[in-house]
Image 1 (cartoon, helix red, strand yellow):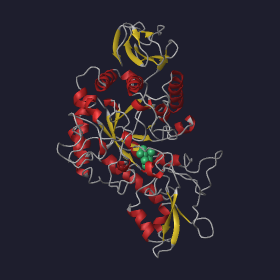
Image 2 (cartoon, rainbow, N blue to C red; image 1 turned 180 degrees about the horizontal axis):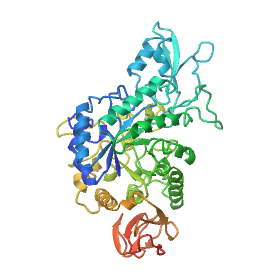
Image 3 (cartoon, rainbow, N blue to C red; image 1 turned 90 degrees about the vertical axis):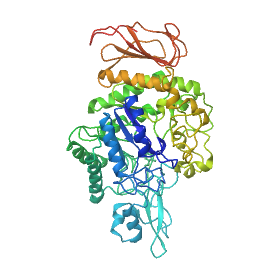
Image 4 (cartoon, helix red, strand yellow; image 1 turned 120 degrees about the vertical axis):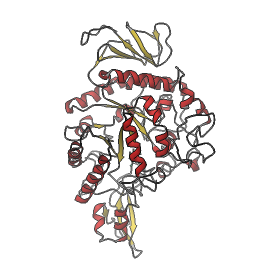
Length: 537
Ligand code: GLC
């Protein structure tokens, strides 16, 4: 199981209200007790934080708000000593506008050689005051910003698929390639076991910069030239001792195009956004699992199972709504939400995702059952999606609220007592969601995760190998894994009988005698022979 730490919201060691490496080091015991195999850290590099650190000014250092490079090295070593591996987040599509290359490109005027490292173009129209294309940014608005020449006259435009503070690199330039190969080595030399690749499908652009049309190929997403980049990265990862993994953030609806990134000489894994966006509906979930496994089989790559991350609505909230899917386009604020229902489903979903073949990812706070915080005062919201969408999109701050650890009142042990308040306010109701409050409570989300992960770790066949669907009543997903392990998830609205079993390993909620209530999952051990035929459910 891979656990995602969002450093500014995990734990604050120095009391400035923002999480940091000192805080992470002081709380590593939580992750060890949870049973995590690896930690993925969202960016911790020097950054003006225009996009919470996904705007990187220096890829080879740590932002002072998080600590120092020496502390990061100590953290990597301490985690290794606990048997926990480290995955760092590399952001290769774009950097920060204060990155020295971009600053040199601006300062040097239209002829600066550094402009070749980015996408600088003349504007259209008689005065060049129209952007080179009408591409729309993932953050809303234009993907181009006009520069001002050193002499004060209006200049060329530069491309940014995200915020204007995030200029896109030109990956056709050999210096960009060489630079990132060196950055990979920098972190691999420091003992990191994996690299999470931000916006991995966006690096290559169609150099003719055509307009994006609904029917034509997208000129900046999944352009074929991107694959050569990952082949060279794979050669670097493979040149290191031990297993070093490359994990891509690849949002693509087409399963075949997605699997191209996982060919044996490219990435090791990519996030499964279909699963993350899938409705709490039996047929859709089953189809998603089948499609995922079918897409991964030909390339022999492990599937990944993700329910939440730092960009999306926490699934306790999502599952408590009428529309249980996630998409950026959907209305995500002011939607009626039943948190009790969402929590029940999130518990069942944990048992589902932790028993599917492949790697499971857990975003910090999922194990505490945290919900999306939807009432963050406007003036405290920091995500650029909020302002750039004209305050239509609530942004992603609601899933980034600092974790509650101990105590009855904010900051709930996130920061040392008596220090600055957390960078985003925590709901007072999180007093029941702290690690301390949940520890030892057999009904808590935390103890459910601990128990499930312990079972998963003890049975390697759970993370790997085949999944065999079993006959089950309408609205129920039942499958067999490994030798005699079964999972049953009741997504119907009636209780269903517990199938024959030798031992009930775990249930996501109370059972009603021998009935599994709606929105509840169970893990069972049966007596069937290894590899033997499955008994009907
Ligand atoms: C990825 C990150 C997201 C960031 C974006 C731009 O999608 O997960 O947080 O805003 O890339 O770097």
